[in-house]
Length: 112
Length: 114
View 1 (cartoon, rainbow over the protein chains, first blue to last red):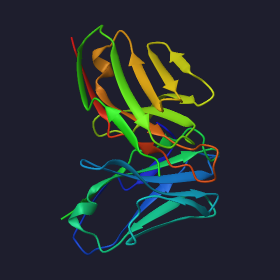
View 2 (view 1 turned 180 degrees about the horizontal axis):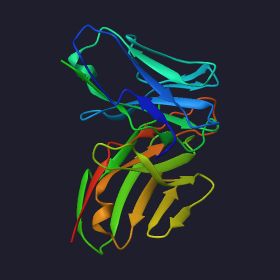
View 3 (view 1 turned 60 degrees about the vertical axis):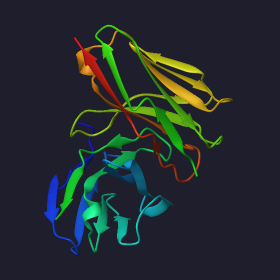
View 4 (view 1 turned 90 degrees about the horizontal axis):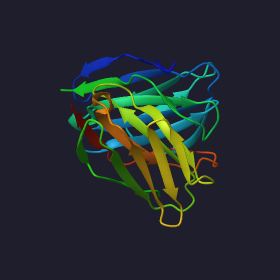
């Protein structure tokens, strides 16, 4: 157990819908990262927050957005879902920017 | 941006043999190179990492080497065991910048047969 928690574990929804994935970092970790893992694209960085502020953006679609709240938990919002958004979404956290990243168990999203 | 290439994509070895996985990176400013192990349906777990001021690092049966000039780094697993079977990912990042995404290779599926 890495100490990073993610909810829900599984999510099944339909095309066009909107979902919210939640992540709680390890106690004391200020930095939160979101990654998407699909069979054809591997692990891809989406976005990073540090102490409530966005720090870096990767290949995140405009339909996706995220935020980090004052209690340091983070949410990833996915809207206008498409079949191709089906993937495992991982959250990771680190104490400092650039430190070792600890991954949560992931949320498996299935878009039908 | 950074690009990480990883080879081979699959690797099959006999128990007790050594396994080597190689990665190359493109951004000479990258300075942090972790390796993650991921079992089926589970989260990636850090197994070893190396920073650019070090050429080699060992942890029991696992070692990582880094060649900054050639921009490549490798994972070495000795005396492989069936429980080493998993997907291994290398990654690179510029760990001294404000934003430090891990850029991952495509992964290597290691199968260790007994």
